Image 1: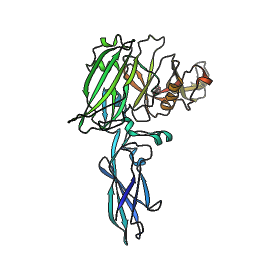
Image 2: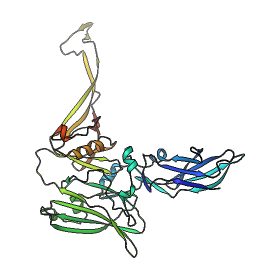
Image 3: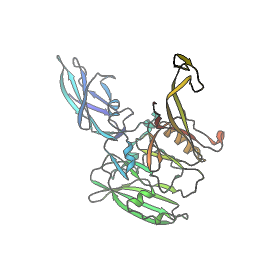
Length: 401
């Protein structure tokens, strides 16, 4: 009497993609045989399910539809240097029982090893190729991890001094400590400033603001270090807390400091990417604000009774408006961008359910009106720009009288 797992999800797996467990038993020939599966989410029993063999002695269980409602990416994560999100990932485990006999009774069982589901939703081909070790910062990880974004690594990322710039990483939490290393370079490529300090990565999915202003606010720089900065690199390091102090570090992310003077007001959008963390992009060219206005009115008969006579006057109205509403919209344009960047932008931004616009230090939720995306190519489009239309979610409603 034994149950054997033949398939389990990755240690960290996106919650909105299939989370598959496959298992078998050597007792499937028993009368009234079935599998009873207990699903545990956040260490608590969520539900019990009955499953029958599907392929010989094998059966499968997909936990994604139950887990995806437990994880979320919130706007509050945008408000601090480091947000260790407790509900951006959740632990999960199943226990599978054999059930058979007359009447059926629970017999032998097996428990899965334990995994984490994070608030990710990958396209099918990306999910098939997904390896969570690519984004897992841990001293035991033989793979050098990168931050949780699909921005093309061959293209430059540019950021001005002030607005937050967010990156996300999966961390292990056990028996290790984490450090952030900052290196600033001038236009010749000379390293003009270096700094390293311990940071807290206390949960499974972590987001950090690595903008120059954030570095100043945390006391890692004083402001003058950025005067000659052409680009800077940020790297996270995980170190085992005992001998032999084994380490692993992320691939450095390189950001070019934008110190340009722009003719138009710069607009920055933030959004939840397919890994459930925050991405950002700047729209530097002309932007236009517009408002759609709706009137709510009714038709009346002109005139009025006065002293037994029904009189008409030029001041009488035949149609009246008792209320108006208004909805603001902004049209934003990118500068000239590389095809790889445009392809990434439209695929990630347009398909995100949560988007914010950065306005005077605050984040305004917006809804994108772009209903389709087209991945542009130099061969057809020549110089490439992208236009994005966003509706502000706060509408205006006038007085009734």
